[in-house]
Image 1: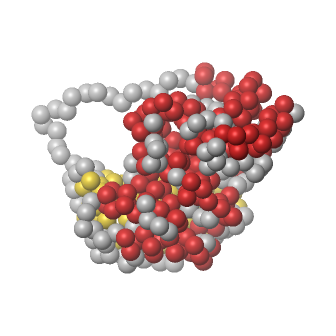
Image 2: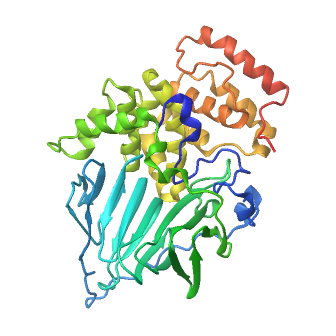
Image 3: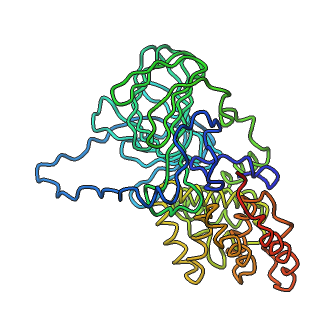
Length: 434
């Protein structure tokens, strides 16, 4: 979450579905798999449902063990305890089976017996302990720094759905790990086959051995292991260190937002309630960060309805950030997309269908076949939330807002801006850049 001037550089673990030809890795040479098309998604086999076998009477309850200790003083990390989220503090113990979330732009250093793991938010993870001697960190989305504390230590990860074992060669080894999800604009986010996952492990210092599907690969400084979608893993030279590594790259306003949000969380009430109160705080950057955190926790309803973020004109400087956060949420998984659609229906049933369509995005083919006209018509919707998402789509496609103000409630005053977009639509200007 940044101010409007820097919104275009915001990083999300699940890449917003804007240009269907974008490469979320930033390196087209690392993407031998062609972009997914609507036709390919239509022909893909349906997802196989999980087995519905009844547990046997002799089934053993999973072992729950201590797996890490939080070692960061001022941060926003939440663990799901039962049906509620608990704000963790420094020296709190994380146990296997806990769902763990790090709020956007926050960091959390977790000390384990084998390494120091630093999660960079927004991030979602969970440890399991099927084997108590080898707990596995499931990183569903986000960024992670792995720092060795001694020689020849083994760290077990599951990146999205891919098991990976990492052997840290010495006590100086440092790795950067990233799990991101993308989806071509226009493809239905409710279909699991319509998204791809990009996994990247980059060696920043020392040496490591990456084992995937029983195949070990040695990485030295300046190399990265990556896997995109169904492609085979590959090792390439790293062009640059990830920007998210250095906290100094943060916008100063973002640091202010973090401090302000932490100051409002007193742990006197459930975390959800305190975040909802913080969403209405007078400092806009704090309210915006609170909203994005609630979205990460699964409370997408905060964005919709008459009191939602997308209907709050005060949040206009952050609407681009919110649009990216919402797209990242529906790109995370089909379950996440369904949860967000359910929130739309609950909070704004009359506009739920267009809102979800606008977050799905438009492919080039869909724009040519009338999607461009639909987007322009949505600029005159009675719903501010619909107008906001329509403009964010147009901005993502063309790189411009044409000075249209979606927060303008007076339809007559919206007309001049809409006429500008109608003229662009008739000239065929509303197209993704090839």
